[in-house]
Image (tube, helix red, strand yellow):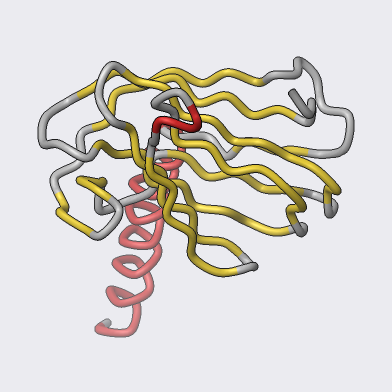
Length: 143
């Protein structure tokens, strides 16, 4: 009897766990990037709600966006614009990078260059606390 109960409880718990996980992924779908993707630039809008103070500004504990680059790209540019001072923390196969807005980028957080294939977690934040609307632009065009 106990074995039968265990087998009915475990699958139910597994199904609930998968349902919760799928719901979390549904909120922030992974963006697939490959050579010559369209439209270019790809634009994603959102609100930074950074509650974790870090060396890269006030960021979220979980990624704001996840990008899967399907093949190495000789050039890719990520740009974050907002009313505040945007920050961008990138965790990926090549390491961890923090990008802060500055006067040279016109108040945008921007990183460009060679990107190797893999999954990248983006934490979009702000140098000050509070919520800020942002626009993330992903492009293969070299200004």
